[in-house]
Image 1 (cartoon, rainbow, N blue to C red):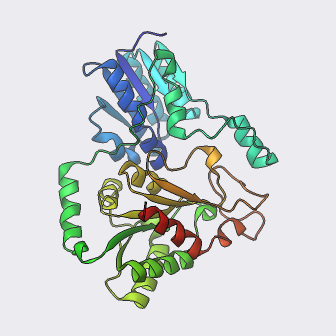
Image 2 (image 1 turned 120 degrees about the horizontal axis):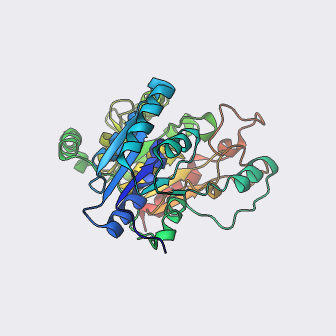
Image 3 (image 1 turned 90 degrees about the horizontal axis):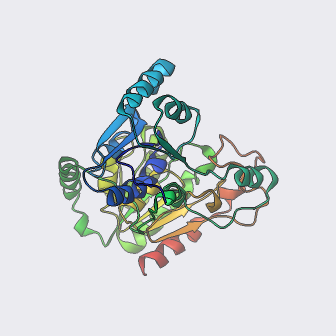
Length: 351
């Protein structure tokens, strides 16, 4: 067993879900090395808020991708000056490889991305994975040489009090206690083949709002505004003008996390908000299209159900999603009906 490091740097530059899934690594490492050891984290500037308030971390180094290679090299030299005992690379791409090379830590551990099984599943449709291992657990594998294991406490997201209080005040004005249920919908996703149709999200929202006298809260980023607005207006037109509230593009990532905590259940595509909801221990229904659980990005440490179409020989067509369906039928999402998701949500709420 290797000696525990006194000074560690963790590399995970992006994106939302991947960074949130890194929180168990940070937590168990802190528990192992104690409060006086140094644990730093390197992340892209646009995602830094996800780790900036993590009290297990010592320093958060922000990488500004807009500064190109010059910015990367400057960061690498700064890291080199820190003289780290250990680098934990749970990203393992060209940028983090360069940062590791130049920063020259005494020891390095790198995630096993299982790229060969992934390639075979996507391109040959051969499943040679040795079981389904969540990404958070793959991250934790990097610490095994030091005798550090997972603690089964799930994901964490740390929200400053001022953000928590601000969101609580905003939602308190909506008088959520008037409703029997508060249901979160996340209709967005970066890639088309990971987005369940907005019409079905709207149909689902209408059904749940009517059946449970529920308030529907809709979340997403600025790029999701069109879909989220369609879902919200469809629900309000059918149920009443106060049935749904659309927060897409309005909240930061931490504000969204704080708001998700008010939901009795969250229904989402396979996207970063799914992991934010899991970090707040919200019951989840996750809808998977072109991706599959074998890639490791299913809800971690939260009560959840994954809805997917297992009757297609073209799934998965990508491990991250595509701009269009390569078969031009989009059956992976098209054949999942609102009733399928509603029934799963109802069963989850009754557990």
